[in-house]
Image (cartoon, rainbow, N blue to C red; front, side, top):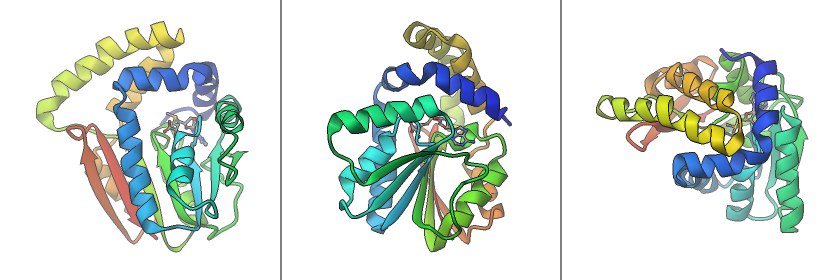
Amino acid sequence: MPDPAAVNSMFARIARRYDVANRLLSGGVDIWWRRQLVAKVCSQQPASILDLATGSGDVAFALSKGLPATVAITGMDFCQPMLDEAVIKQRSSGGYSNITFIQGDGMNLPLADETFDAVTISFGLRNMGDRHRALTEMHRVLRPGGRLHVLEFSQPYPGFRPVYYFYLRRILPTVASVVTGDRGAYEYLCGSIEQYPDHEGMNAEILRAGFASVDVTRMTFGAVALHVAQK
Ligand SMILES: C[S@@+](CC[C@H](N)C(=O)[O-])C[C@H]1O[C@@H](n2cnc3c(N)ncnc32)[C@H](O)[C@@H]1O
C-alpha cells in the first residue's frame, strides 16, 4: 500500500498541472468516467455528499451542477495544494456556493458518524495508505441506506491488457514528464494501477468494510470500474 506522506508530497508537486495532465493522458475520457459517477449519484437524489480525495474538485463541481443548490457538498482531501486548485476554480467561477472544501485524511475522517447520504471517491482509493481503514471510515460517515460510489482504475479485459500496459509503462510516464516535469509521480501511478485489485477483488474489499451490497459497472474495456455500495 502507498506511503501517505509520499503520496501527499507527490500530489503537492503536480497539483498545478494535474488537470491538464489528466485531460491529455486520458484523451479526455476521464471527463466521461466522472460523468457516469455523477449520473449515478444524482439519480439517488442525496441531500448531503462527501467527495473524498476531491483533489482539484472536478467531481464536486459536476455534482453541484447536476443537483439542486440545496444539496450540501463537502470536498475533502489531505493535500492542501490540490485543495488550493479546487478553491481557485470555485472562486473564479463565482458559483458553486454549496461546496465546502476541507482538508482531512481519508483514513481518519474529521467527520461525525452517519452525516452523509452519499460518499464519492474518484481515483482516490488506490492512493490510500490503508484501503480497509479508508472504506471503514466512509462506511462510518454514511447514513444507514446511504451509498458509496467508488470510481477507480481496475484490471482490464485480458485481450486489452498488452496494449493498456504498454501505454501505462512506456508512453504515459514520458508524456507526463513533459507536461508535469515529474516522471516519478506517473511511474508511481502506473505501478499503483498494476497492483490494484480487479473489479471482483474490489467488490470483496467493499463488502468486508461492512457494506450490505455492491454493484460494479466496468468501463473502457474494464480499465476503469464504478462500484456503488449500500450501507
Ligand atoms: C488522482 S487524485 C484524484 C482527484 C479527484 N478525485 C479526481 O477525480 O480528479 C487522488 C487524490 O487523492 C488524495 N488522497 C490520497 N490519499 C489521501 C488520504 N489519505 N486522504 C485524503 N486524500 C487523499 C490526493 O491528495 C489526491 O488529491
